[in-house]
Image (cartoon, rainbow, N blue to C red):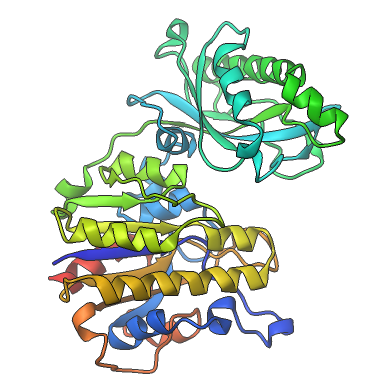
Length: 409
């Protein structure tokens, strides 16, 4: 049995008065996802546990059967591995934002979504021009984000991820000082080293010609890197060993790439897949078909743009990209030759456009077989209300892979 598992980042939402309490999923025209819902099984999933607002990293770990309460060490390693930097078990790394700071206040945590159009030389500067007692390795991840690994041999084995990073979490707040989470010698030393690194980065970026030019043009400069989500490379049971499927991941977003690599899913490049609003969804479907019709049993396909629209508080854009996902699924269904294939669709968390951030509500889950898509069994649709009527009821993310495995057997 071949399986396509689609996770639409941040797809779930909440109803508000201006839309007569209908969510973007209820307002969108999504005939293919509704077809999957009405011919297979449906339910509502709490990605980690009921009432918990989670990030994409912990949600995906839970959904793939790797308990985040046991294994999670921060998202920095996922982002950094996904950006193309090799890491060994125990190495520490950060998920970072290029940001704009003025007099110690972080005015913009995200300096510019179009950062790649002008800012990539700043990443080269991080790798070559810093004057610190430690060395780093940085790669571009997505938009304004980079993965950053501490690589100094002087502190090999002597650094820990048990620190709080420098991100203030909201705009117009002071830059944080890294602090130890525990009062251990390693954690205290690591926090001190990271604060020195942050200061050196700020000084170097402030003096960089690109940022000087942006200041002269009245544009925010990328003069600080927020060191976020310090995490170690973790060791977990390999996906194929755990489930018996040879798996692949289609995800241009670095953090999801890195998580896939961590659990043993093989990452595949897709032309035009960017992890943002410009991503080519149809090419993702084509790649999924190619992989499933050849050597792979399981393909995980991740969609990011819907979540971005929620964070950008844009209802119409969220509906637009939900509909683009449906068009992608229609292409997949109409063009794959494996009519006994299974297709499952869900989200990893709620990102309500009214709030612009993650919240704790459940997300819809649907699963069906391509051979059943013309055999409508019920009136369930793919949204937060209708899926509760499905026979799967309400369940936790850690049960998803077993549901898929049992349905596929």
